Image 1 (cartoon, rainbow, N blue to C red):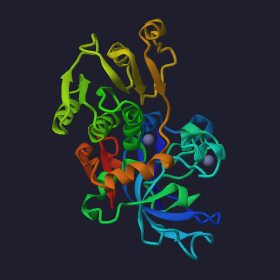
Image 2: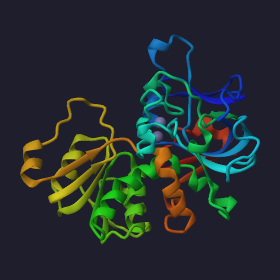
Image 3: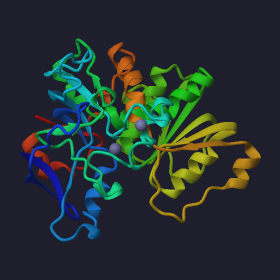
Image 4: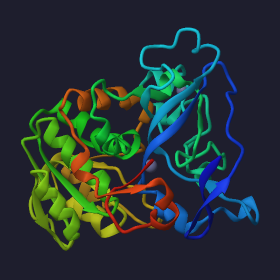
Length: 351
Ligand SMILES: [Zn+2]
Ligand SMILES: [Zn+2]
């Protein structure tokens, strides 16, 4: 089968690889039909395969997908759980998780106790384990009843591409605001976007959907500000040098130290700063004295895909959240090798 593969720094190509097979009675085999590019994909591709994996090694790409169920394991086939019949369209958790350990049952499937940390599709350079990638003809899904969530009944098939990013970047944006707005309904929300553009815009969309008092997006990126205005938030141009107001809930979304410091300075006293960012540079520091004095509560960590998918898909199915306005480019399957690194906010590859 064909698998989109990163074979060198910045090099993406189709490779013929053996198709996966069912390996456990709870597995499913799925065929991805729409795959979104995650914010982490371009930096992973530009870095290329790990030297430890040796010359000629390539890793599979893609981990945000709408999939079609093709085959079910022995435990599932005789009486497929609702929504897991062969032919069903589903969203697939990008993190592999078991659904039964203490972490999974506690809503923290991203740190499943049964599997090594960073057990993800399409991210072999991070974990060292190849789980396959969604830009493939076939993917094995372990613990399928946990990992797969059916596409909402009646969802317009012509709009499937807009669901592809839900398993990762959409749930990431959602969880950056949802628990805080549940604790304090009607908060005014600021999203500071200095990289990782789609996650920040999904956070802004989620804040609107969850009844934030107001939603402001600050950025120095004109494309981000245009999208922020289009979805009905207040766009504010910033040079990230000086905070413009203070908010009880601030989402930090990006890659730059000055963006993080701007976000810290924009939090109201006793407010919350939620970061969805992964800072590669280990020398980046936080002004802890300032944060202590002003009582800034800082939360950071990965989203929990399998745990959050039912809630987010339910909201989308009920018409409460529509990720579509953040999709900026939809390309064909065969275009993926040439266009996967296009400069666009949210790229989706469809069959
Ligand atoms: Zn991702
Ligand atoms: Zn688990």
